[in-house]
Image (cartoon, rainbow, N blue to C red; front, side, top):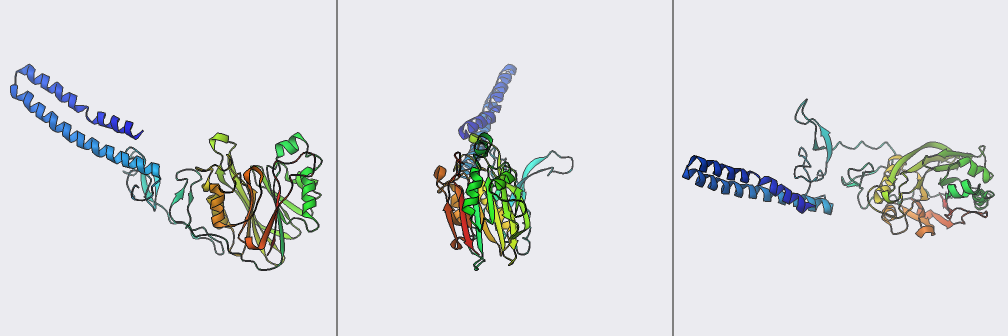
Length: 392
């Protein structure tokens, strides 16, 4: 593509030479012998100047295209106050700058793009973990653009050292098949939850592909007197045992998006902050990741993982036990899971579809995980449920 652009530019710049040839014809018409010689010399000079100019433009464009292809964030960038399209190929703004549209030539002037100084990030609230930035961006100029934190930044330090039991569940319910087609198959998912929860029961549960959270809880023999359930949108939900835990805050945030090759929409991460009677706090997040499975790039790859970490960093408190669960649609070794493993400790992974269900925590050393069955009825989910237990 760069070569075709360069050739088109060169041809465009050399167009005036033919006009000089027309001047020779007019000189001959008036019978002026010196006129044609002068015009020819001028044409040669113009051609040399234009060739030099064209070569410079081509060189700049080739450099810009090469930098863009390489994803360079070094010297090949546009400075503050400059047009990122000046070479004919967009060159990303330098660190500390961002692309902005405005009437930069004065009131009433046409709007244009310039690289402008980036605003200083707002300081985190007191007690919030925080999310540091290197100034580099992942998925730059896309809706899911996210700051890249320092390589050594992580949340692997556990703030808890007690013996309080915390038991969690992650379960993709395969709703359209297990519930819509087979009416739950004699409480298949619910019976699994009741059986594996045992006498102590689950403290917090994260459901994916869940259209009716209370249907699932009722099938498990759990009711509103003991549990609360929150709809996170995009068919995800969290249920927690309200007789043991008090809800402090919750939210749901889009963090990724399916690739165009298998598109259903954007993907969210929902979280709750809970506190028990001892004053211990848990930040629990549930996520259903983008498709295609394990695909990288854009809003599907590691940008999703970094957006998850950003939501955690901006909402979890420094004393929280952090637990992240879900069907990430990303197997071990994928860019998403590798990024999360840099920032949190992986407690457990399933094995279905290459191992796309996971549990992460900042207290990984104090937790153990287990892969459960897919259900207890004739028909089941297509995913194994995962459980994890912590001492906090």
